[in-house]
Amino acid sequence: MYVYVTRNISARMRRSDGTDNGYKSLIPGKYKANKTNDGALEIVQDKDEPVYLLPFVWWEQMELGDISLTG
Image 1: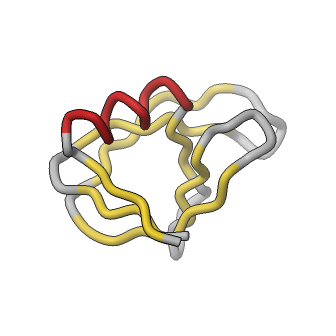
Image 2: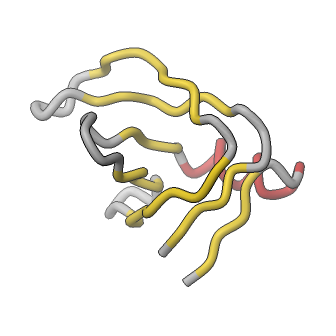
């Protein structure tokens, strides 16, 4: 699936062990994404570790028109 970001939004960063690693800004553009078991969106990046949009965050961002999803 792909996520299109239309405005700057913040996504959570997780370390490989699952612990929190702060936030990262996603600039507008197209990102490859996977849905996780807990409903979050995993945004895959080329060189960095993936970042995550939690379910309540990405639903709200979709309602505001800040992101859209495609299959």
